[in-house]
Length: 150
Image (cartoon, rainbow, N blue to C red; front, side, top):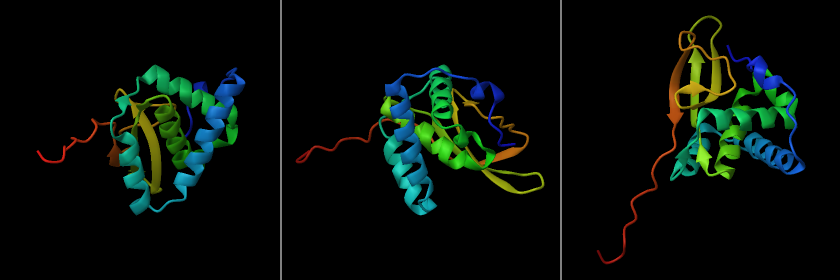
């Protein structure tokens, strides 16, 4: 259910700058994954504010760079860190995917986190028949600015 798409594991040649950006995103994703949900959700909602939605091809490319920088993030038990790292990587490029959290509704019960772009999962084998989405954080418009005195 939460395996990484095999095509994402292919060798990807990335530059030193791209590797540094990917490693930074992975580090921040790892730190965010340590937060309790009550702290994580406001951070994700803040990141989503004013972001443009990322297109699927761009999100897939950034996902592949994350895997090229650190293949361990491709493990099935690293879905939360991987999805948060993709959110950070996309935000560094001015866009954001939809971050999703759900549960497998077939035995065994398992939680899963992933990202979607243009309504499709990015680099994950996630079937709507197997996973029930419980929570999403999507890119959105910036908040209305209120000018003092108006």
